[in-house]
View 1: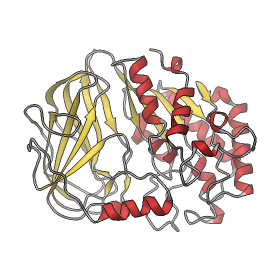
View 2 (view 1 turned 30 degrees about the vertical axis):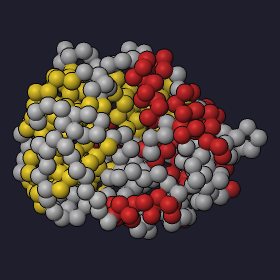
View 3 (view 1 turned 180 degrees about the vertical axis):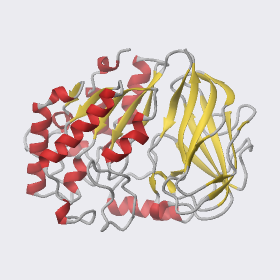
View 4 (view 1 turned 120 degrees about the vertical axis):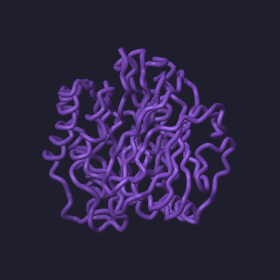
Length: 389
């Protein structure tokens, strides 16, 4: 039975200070596919754009890991204009791919400001000057905003990759019964430190069967959109309860999901990111997390929920917030049957000698997000038998 299966995807937010300026350029997205397929189609979105963009075309081709084309480009039928707020799916093109092969999607934007996308950590996107869709040897350009991004990384002590604009999903027409695992979370997942080693484990355990799609958003909350006090409007995305349909439920190929969301509802209030009155009611927050699981399970998706990680050492932490985190985790553990499986993420990374703290050797410089060691520990602790076909 043939089915369109995502081989790559991201959740869109407003790129804010990281958006691209007006001008003709090509974005070449490099993908190492985990599943096979014989046709390719692409979902494009300007959902967070304030103005239309004019497109010069979309094509796909096999390539190497550096984006050098290894075969002829296949043009996809795509609109010439993408209106503000619009999402479209291109026509499909014939390209036979096996698990582990590299290929690329080259999107030319002729005019307009690409403002919708994400700072994606699961693929590399080259920015080329002009219409370079069919150029065999790519020569990436540089831009001033890369300096801004690197400065933000240093200032915030966070891991922010270059943005991928307009591209939302790349899908393959699969003949082997493959499906996808959606990671629905926040920056703890979006940064990729645990999701990438988890994906490698999935590829090794179930070759050609699953792709792992990172539908996580930096700063995302369950109950609230980006706070009006936050300077980067829309950067934290649409609240989890409102983006689930768009990012997960609309895709029939999703058979499993990992639900890692809720930390930002506790961290952000009374900080630069949110007002004091944005403090959540614990019962409301937990019920909203359960409702996300309920909706996915009702859609035939098996859900692995996650407890919240301790964040007592990060700059926005307080005793009150740490206590709320403990209360949320107590409710999640007491109601583990609201998920198909509860992964006690908190227990995996907690400092055994200091309650309400995560092991510092597992954390990056901001003392909130995982580093490579912490991410690997999380990925290795996930029971892959949950995903057995």
